[in-house]
Image: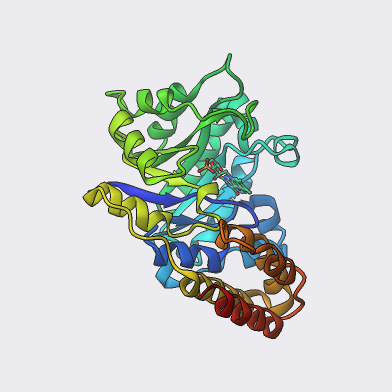
Length: 319
Ligand SMILES: Cc1cc2nc3c(=O)[nH]c(=O)nc-3n(C[C@H](O)[C@H](O)[C@H](O)COP(=O)(O)O)c2cc1C
């Protein structure tokens, strides 16, 4: 997997980066998007919710499906199921710090069992012709910063690209991401696969700083894209010309929400779409004076027609 251009990727985020949100981010210039993570075991057991996460549209490409688990054979079998829907790549999650994942030996737990992590990567690479990438952290804690050896070993078994989140498992999402080790991996002469840096990119200026300082092949943006999907456009513009476009006006923000909702209704049904959209409103309309009463209405609206009439009220008030 070689890139001629600097990659600005959307981070996979459980309960956020479904197809509808990914398409909004694509519309604003995300170069690469990934599904929410999917448990290999659940996919093999035919769990419906996991199968639904395989759904994507062609306009999301290049699109990857992320798997997690602990058993190399199960991951290889799940990768074969994933390959049937022809994503552009399969991404392996070796970084999730959440208790229910780590307890079963998946996600970041594999940072404590590197041989198993490598067997998983090898088994998945061998099971499919689709490129396999991986996403991990610096190490389990600050005494076990294993990322350099992990990167080399993953590359040796055929991992095509590595994304590194600059935190340890012990840090969860606290403290600041440390990009120093990400830079060391990128600049290690033994490493020739693309390295994408991740952690705390929340502005075009920060993106440029990390690009220049650490020489990574790309950056991945997670939390800062929630309620702010135009950050991809802003970063691109800043990297190319040093300028940042005006933030979207109220009508554009309403249009983004509406597109998000419509796509979500098609994919998940009206009830689920209206409920799930609630977590996006405060970000989408952040910094608007007097917005609280509108937000309260939006997060209690029960159906799409009601949401649309609140959008009309918002448009009328702020225009
Ligand atoms: C709500 C939420 C869900 C996440 N789910 C996943 C996931 O499914 N797979 C994954 O690899 N990382 C997941 N992450 C981690 C992000 O991909 C990313 O590594 C992390 O948020 C740091 O990047 P940021 O500072 O740009 O947000 C999640 C993070 C958040 C906040």
